[in-house]
Length: 153
Image: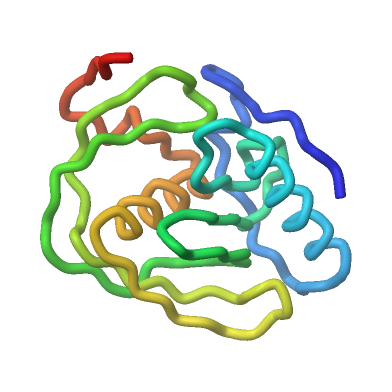
């Protein structure tokens, strides 16, 4: 495993749409492991999309709210409710915004072994799913901002 460099701010790769993974193989599993290792070595990290480490593939790792997920080709298949959120992002250090997100989100994905999974997350997890899956389409949390937020140290 290797720690990858996180892409920041105006790096154009953050605005690119990631490509679907055709086959979940050892190469994909290694990328997911690298992403997880990178996430674990980054302060305040909850999740990471592949383009945040310069890889244009539809891959996400999440280690947040008791979820430990490696997702291949994830997509939202259902959502309900509304919540106001405070969001930050590893690619935009020390920036926080208020967003409006679904309160409950269901995703469909392949796991690191190519097996289909369906997961429903609520509240913080719903926010996380939306945030990370939008990264895969080149959408960043600042695009969803309704207000900039200053957090007190």
